[in-house]
Length: 226
Image (cartoon, rainbow, N blue to C red):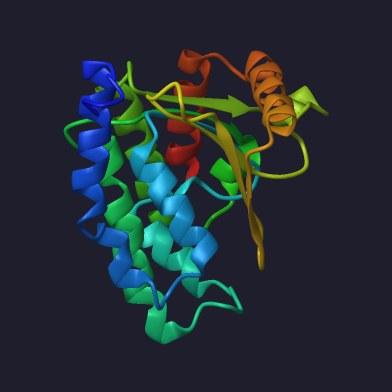
């Protein structure tokens, strides 16, 4: 760094990367459980400073309660063995440190109304889950944004499949997109394709309910879970 006269701020960042590279991140203990592509994603998620996501059927893993996550994993996923469920849940709960740690991630999501009404785990589990969303939004309004796309909107740009956009604090790290469906996943880092997802998210966000309207709807649906 002295020979190349690297800027002090860049030198400090490189030194942090060098030190981090000598250790093993928490997700390495799950290397036998998850495919390499998902382990890569966990690394990106750990280093991101912002996530923007859209979901049409299930909640993002960072928002799930343990009971909701267990219901998802035991509800018919053919690729999840019952003997793996507890370890998978532990990994999902560990990921949620990004919301509450020393350097909390900013999180913005658009949820189709069906996500809130699908009774994953039954009414009691879902009521607890929806109340958890309310707590996150009310206690961390500057960090967590949850917007709901109501049924009455009709068609909208993101309709069709979940995705999330990860942004990073370093200008040398471009944004990327993570997509995951039942049996496959994909990291998209081509700038033109990522730009399409960013535009789609922003246009979808414009059509969603406001933050206050979304919070009121979440509370109302939670009370209906009886």
